Amino acid sequence: MSWSDGRLQEPELLSRPVDRLNALVLPRLVDPHVHLDKAYTWTAHPNLSGTYDGALEANMNEHRVRDQESVLSRGEKAISRACQNGLRAMRSHIDSLGPGADASWEALQALKSQWHGQVELQLVALLPIAHWATSAGAQLAQRVAARGGLLGGVVVPPCRGESVRRDLRAMLRLAEELGCGVDLHIDEASHGAADGLQQLLLVLEQVPCHQPITCSHASSLALLSPRRLQRLADRMAAHRLQVVALPLTNGWLLGQSPQATPLRRPLAPIRQLQRAGVRVAVGGDNVADPWFPAGDFDPLALMASCLPLAQLAPWQRLGLSPFTTTAAAVMDLDWDGRIGSGAPADLIVLEADSWSEALRCPPQRRVLIGGRWWQP
Image: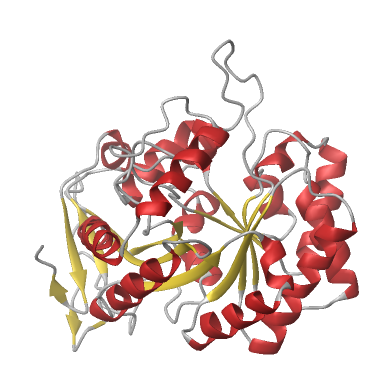
């Protein structure tokens, strides 16, 4: 494979067969859901219980002492690792209400500019959805939209009732008025099966929204019966909702109990949603923060973890697309991630002779960005 002026040229067939491959070539990959503002905070703010409530408490403690310098330092480390590991784009949710909010936005906006051309960053305002129904929320939405960001929020059970629908309506109206997308933390729970999505669908029947709506987590959908899940998935497809599944953090946090191993893991039902025509991507979510103690912004390690957790095999089209073409579509990126003539010369070259070798342990790799080999 060759390239010129930062673009791939027509691939050439091998002149003769080979007995053994010595490399796998992939497009640079995409992570549609990360949290750069809190990455690498586990050491100072651990969540030793491994519970959702423990993560929330530690997160709030960290947020109170967060400053711009610390977010810049952690974010620089995170993006550098992501680039070295082969990511070309990430969508980061930012804690956007409270003492560390302004510092987080300023730091990540600076990093977005600094890394432009190497890693594309999209930023989402993460806060309780009730805030969007206030005057302060409307002002924040204008600032987020002016910076090219997305509106986000948390919708977890208990979330039934008119108050939740009112807040969702306010959020969707702001998104429509300002022309910016929406990315929700929704149904990240081991109970209240699909409560949040049910409310969102009811609102969409009243307040149509033409902006892209991403439903991150969607974990409790796995608690539905097959028939109810099919009906819900069909409605989601009709409203063009897209999903980002997050197997690592959900597998670690949800249903956590010191007395028992969960017998039914809440995880977005990826294959059922794909079959219904819902666009589904997979993200890494948290890295070494109170919500998940491990991770390294490594898409190959994420693929390997998804083999047992989500049974996604990257040698199958629907197993690979959540990390490549579908992830790029969820983020509405210019390049869909397919390799071919005229595509960006953005590649990962793995020292592996098969998918099995590539996934057994993170392999040595070289990363090509715009026709140039990246040097850390």
